[in-house]
Length: 396
Image 1 (cartoon, rainbow, N blue to C red):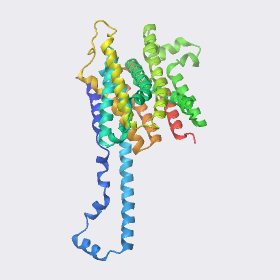
Image 2 (image 1 turned 90 degrees about the vertical axis):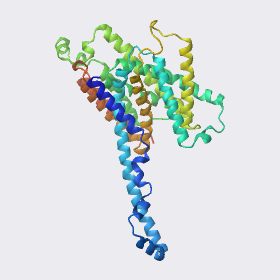
Image 3 (image 1 turned 135 degrees about the vertical axis):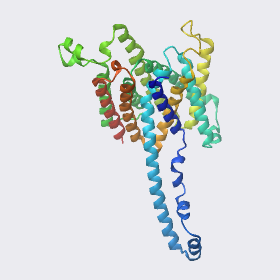
Image 4 (image 1 turned 135 degrees about the horizontal axis):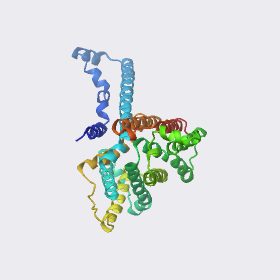
């Protein structure tokens, strides 16, 4: 096992282990601060308090305990929120690298997406049972309503995951993460068309800035900034300049276009799901979504042969392939945890940090020819500013 693989495994293990800890394990000292304070009292003090405590003293103590509990809980929650923000940024940055490393281009995409849905099913079912909401969520459940509300999003998510996997395998980490943020634009468009949710003026400006970031990432600026291309072709170190025509065609057809399609589908699916979740339990919806997706993918595997004659359904698979599958599922959990313990705005900061980390990891792991160029850093910076503006100034 080489050094790069060891580094990736350490990152994956950190994300998996820490994100699977229950949140209360970090805040357990603050779950009952009155018990913690009382444990420092002597038996004599307890007896004296029991005999001479008045209603006024009890009120003062209750107020003091509540103040201490609020302070401790706030501090612990803030600490947990920052921890989950860092883990989300780390998962966001490492997911493209883990997928490229452990999910080769020869893998049958249907089997990979099926594995993702199996992990989603296990995770959502476990959370639904652990929270004790199973009976309440399934009361009055009807399979006709299930297929009507979940069928279209399930098909959309299968397509999105296929396109995302293809893009993961053909784009550098920072390029994928920046282009993938175009889902913010598609989500804004479809939420307006389907739900009637308008964007603020600042948010619309942020979306324009996001388009500029995509433009900076994908257009050779040397041809725009100088009429003498020969000089800049010798100086420019970006990956696309060194591509042959065949490599350039593969880069766009199997990299850029799939990630943009995945982002567009993500926005449409997100708007449909947001409308559905107004009347359905979110965890039950995840279970339904996974079950229908698994059924569709299983049918495909039964009746459709792999495109390559020499391929089988296990081609490209190993135990290591489960690493990006699991970390991808944990990414969805981390988004929920960050939103709960830190807030939606802070989630945007975590994704910005993730883009910076993806560039740093790319420089650390990849060869010199694939390191992040100045143009890619510029695109990442513009995308980060766009994310911050869009999350900081929502529509009133």
